[in-house]
Amino acid sequence: MALDMDKFHFGTKDEKKGFCIELLDALKKRGFATIRNHGVFKETLDAQFDFNRKFFNLPLDVKMKMKHPAQATPNRGYSYVGQENVGNISGYGKGLGPASTRDIKESLDFGSDIDDLVDNVEVPEEVLPSFQVWIDGFYHKLRETQDHVLAALAIALGIEESHLKSLHDRAENEFRLLHYPAIPASELRDGTATRCAAHTDFGTITLHFQDSVGGLQVEDPTEPGTFRDAESSNLADLILIAGDSLQRLTNDTVKAGRHRVTYPPSVDKDGDEMIPERHSIAYFSKLNRDVSLLPLKQFVTEATPCRYEDVTAWEYNNRRSASLYEGLYEG
Ligand SMILES: O=C(O)CCC(=O)C(=O)O
Ligand SMILES: [Fe+2]
View 1: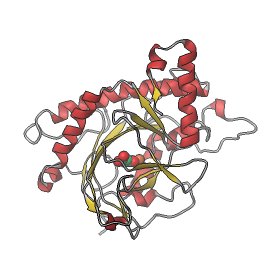
View 2: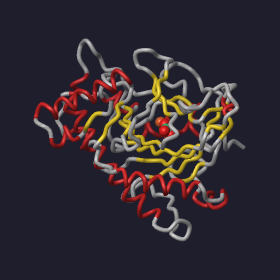
View 3: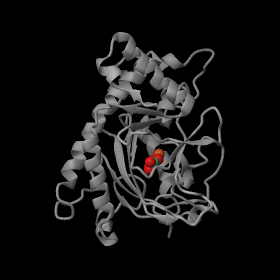
View 4: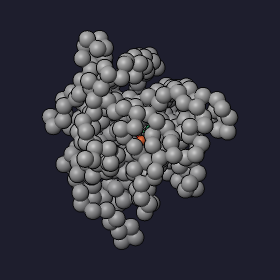
């Protein structure tokens, strides 16, 4: 059941508080929360998914003109199928090494148009008219939603309402459009390939939207190893997953949600069917680069000693993302 964010904005004091508590509860118990009335209208999402399709339908040589650089940072531009392998970070936090799976996906990464450190790899007007202007607007639209979600989480966690939001006020988020090409179900069967291998995201929260194909799954925090579909009856619902940085700031009070993309619920894993192509959007909320990932003081007590080192959000982000592209550019 999706949580109704209208209760946060327009509800009574108790309804607002109730929304915040349920949101935090869902992250703790299921590893994700679905939210409706989050401020991004269905028409806006439909238009964004139209742009997704238009971009990924371009010929490969055109997409390669917007190519992601040869290393993980800066995380901007187009990554072809096989360029980024999330399996490399699947074992993170579990004491395991990289998994030997390859992801069958392509993606296009952006930051904000006002980021003063990293420039976007822009999609030129002659390649896709109005695309870049739309993307820049979409970034800020989602940022507004992010700010409200962070306020709700802060309330539930007993932190000052604007505190988490203020740690994100430099527009250093990133977001990506993803396309998973149609493949025969048999291609995923022996476990050497997947759509997107299991992982946690590096930022504080990730806002996900997926098309009607589905396939996003989140690990049950109470049953490690069991992944459950993160489906929603309404495609305009936002699927919220916590990331490593929120886990660190809250000293494990909120754990990062481990997630992956695999067979959609409608496809028979043992059959010969084609898995349809899939489009999705992942908006990664990132702390300002200079913020320390030491747990906030409220979360460090005698019973819950500090579990994490003093590292900046940027250093941590770069350390984690470096492994995503590892092995590709040797020699
Ligand atoms: O495609 C999706 O729904 C999820 C993608 C994802 O988890 C990621 O890019 O970090
Ligand atoms: Fe992710």
